[in-house]
Image (cartoon, rainbow, N blue to C red; front, top):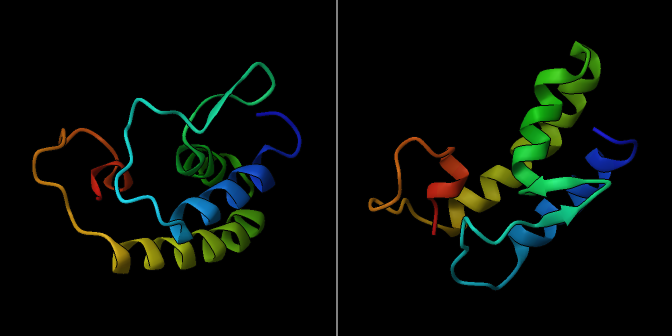
Length: 92
């Protein structure tokens, strides 16, 4: 991970969660550049949560879980999606 990617991912995930777009497509990555890599902001956040020391991860987890609660309240499970995907990829 590059410096600053966690804050960018958190900002992008917040915009995504609070946005008005009705459906997301897994093939439409939110990051697609040489410095950030490719992928979704929530995936980057999950990666950071696993890599960070416990104290830093706890702080980030509070923010991510708050956004996840909003997403869960605004969306529903899409039963036709691949069950191997992370839960946030299976919401619509």
